Length: 424
Ligand SMILES: *Cc1c(COP(=O)(O)O)cnc(C)c1O
Image 1 (cartoon, rainbow, N blue to C red):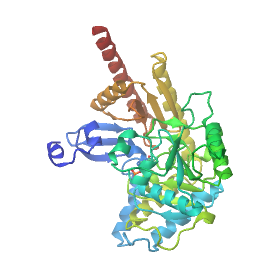
Image 2 (cartoon, helix red, strand yellow):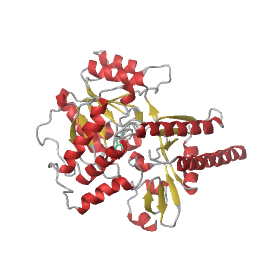
Image 3 (spheres, helix red, strand yellow):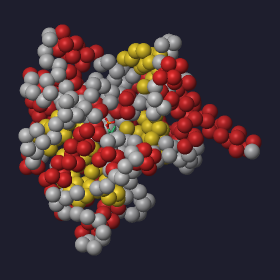
Image 4 (tube, rainbow, N blue to C red):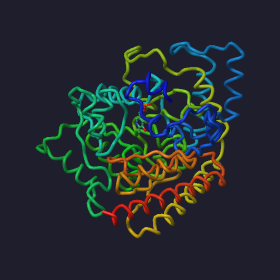
């Protein structure tokens, strides 16, 4: 760690929360150089939905590598790309009655978000983007402009124009329908809000604190976008690829977004791969108008194809994710109930947040958990929510062991906090 501290920029973050040197990993277990085993409930912020070094996916890429097939070919056609698009179309899209074109963007989620914003502006000839309180869309300027977090916004050092923030579902309490509010603001010719090119939304806000939008709210937003001639963009970077129990996080609400943004677990292996799904009628790009060196990396397309073939051919995997999600949620609710109304549990599928309300409790709990062998991250505007994103392939035993470590760490933290309060 001393090398890291001396040589790596101050900007490093996860190596502060999890101070260890991680040498190997498999499934839901990471090994540190000094021989500790850590249960991973972070999963690369939702990048490792199928676990670390998933052996079946690995077989596909090692075979690809050893055959001298093309690894980098800009966005030229390769068998790897054809196979990915064909598999994705038949296994994922056709099964769900969805029809999209594929746009492979630069490898990060943020590059895909940028492309989505740019395309919406181009298609509609409008500039404004509606995004939501506590939303997170990435670190490039366009994506930060659509993200709520003041720390990141200030860090950009630039003005961040082109977006209007509206309250997300539940932001103003249970009794206020914020979709009604948005409708009013967009339909009123004198509300001061410019006609939007797009409404950009996460169906569950990952970084924002595991805030869950309801089916009714999402459907209202979709209808409203149509009404005002704006595109609906679902940022499914963190909640897509099975995280909520279905491949797309918007399936439960039967949405048909104009653009879907995918990244994180899309390659199935932690390799960088991002893409947009865009409706054919809005594919207004001119050839080469949006480009990039690392678009649709072939190795990532191979692992992405293998993941779809392995897990999405039928409903079994999906049902398993929902079952495990229920199990997690129930257990976390039981833990929360031991503390009266101090904590709240929310989420969908295997994306669950445990809201400690107080940043200190979340921080201390996560730190203690790591000391005891569990990696969990925090999210939310104050980092007050402990975020559970285990691999979707985790076994019950490891899942329960992880939850037990969390339970003990929380109990320790609360006891210590109470002592501190009574002591002062
Ligand atoms: C992680 C994330 C992004 C940004 O992806 P990067 O690869 O970090 O650029 C955007 N939107 C959501 C919802 C994310 O979770």
